[in-house]
Image 1: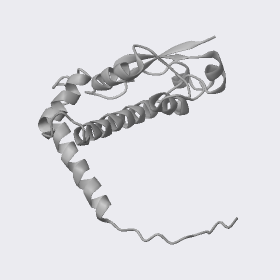
Image 2: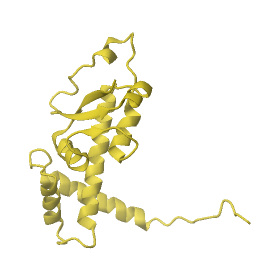
Image 3: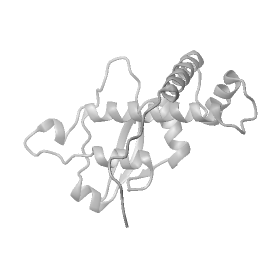
Length: 169
């Protein structure tokens, strides 16, 4: 017996996942988001009523939209179909970070049509049809500059490579 999970996600993440995986995602070992979600699943504990009938209230003042995820028979039997509130929030934060990293790569791409960060961020948001209310431009721009600074500082650090093991054949 297969199951369908209505996964609560942030509005801009629903649009991102819909573009990447379609209107409904099927759990499998293919794809980063699918594999991440697959590893977060737990079995329902029969003695704990919270895992049998989980609460729909996650966080105050945070809007979540349901995204349908299809779970096959084998995964349902071996992994389960329960996601704790903590795991749902971690999933949303991880996918949000993936979205932002993709935006950074989009802006830094050598074949970009325009090399102005502002225009690139707006084009990226337009590609996923993300509105200003869901993901403000100023937040994305600040995050871009922080990430750029972090990457530049990381590139300056020189690490001396010492051979730990030598293979002889």
